[in-house]
Length: 606
Ligand code: AGP
Image (cartoon, rainbow, N blue to C red; front, side):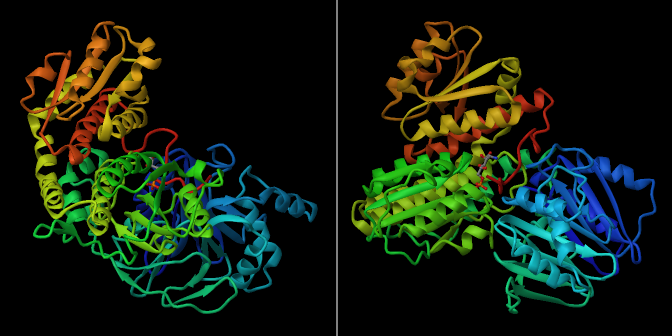
């Protein structure tokens, strides 16, 4: 998954490109490059490493021009080095391209191009696109791109320019691409934050769209060349919202944004008087006999909480799959199956393809998604937006708690409509949901944060961690372990606490910190027994305990007190402590928490 920017207008293109790419580095930062039209010549500058390396290299040069394209890369084919960095050019340097996605049939295409005399510089699949377009170019760049793409199989957001044409041609299939509409200037980017310094008028290009932009006009067509019209969306986010807001990192900002994010997710959807929710979903909640929840990573763990809540409150069988497995296991789907895809980006290719699989098999589909206008939002039968706002930190935090609160609202929606949840119980849960922003605010109080920072420091040299949770908080343990792995690179495993004695207990010794989620629950006594089993083997126990619970707290070496919450919403309050534990462990170890190694914010390649 990579970051792409294109610009044509009166400004110095290098400034626009570098500024835009700096807002997209979360999409990948193995290398970066720009190409600028300096008259009737395309100058390329590209470097391995983060964008800063390129910015530094450009400082010493007078690369000026008012049309350009730029790219920050997350490597799929070919090592992250200068040669494999984008942009890629034809041998004569006349055609230059940048690409986000994967060209699945690039090898046969490359072989055939080499047989025709083309020579390649890089190991990438993307470079094939430049040569394919060159093959088709007879003076009309748009036509050459259109014809070339007919031979391509895979995912792309592709941006192309030619030294002799003051225009930029772009196309997208699967990988995201948005257009920024300016006044006497136009922009292209992989995502909105790259545009906000210049325009709030954005067009979310659809799969199969092509666009040609000039400074004063643009034209959108489908791959067959038929003109299509796309609405211009006014983006409310201000540039500030996508910045760090005074925090050291995006990740910490987003952890502290959770009360607001939860407010936005729940806003206008809770009906206290009837104990119901108003989700504006045009699906019949009574028509489903089974539910599939499909997602990846953190979104998958939100789905596990959803399984628990929906089965408890709506009494419908729920299966939860990681998307990469769902796609290939011939799942049993019927017309009374509801397939729920959960995704922050709405672009994760595994989840997108799993969605297509479920649709093909006849399921009704619902997206629980953050990114407006993303690919998944256009392919599901309906969308429940979670309105978390931009999440730039690669490790998901505020979006996770928003996803879980969306799962609670779906469970309420289903349970109340199907009569398995009466109005009194519904009102109780609505009240619990309303309390969430305040409880999460409390969970972020300075003295709690300081205590967690202390614990992170104490165990920072651990080689491994074990996370334990039960019931609705078993997924919380899994999400906590994932956060620690992603941010600090310390190995961490999570288990349903009752499972520990079936093997993992062999791991327990004085070097192993064990995080046990021991908050208020009907299962608390059993969790305390698990904690005692760990202590009996000299394991170090960090217990997450509800405020005031001195019984559970006395069994632990270290205690993280969290605000007491209704058990059905406690995963949202409890996970905040685990996010902070992972964050401070990572900062204590000097890790780059916003851009952890090897990761990308949204994995749009398989
Ligand atoms: C979360 O911390 C990870 N960065 C990753 O697991 C992420 O949740 C996963 O890739 C799914 O992304 P999505 O929600 O955009 O589909």
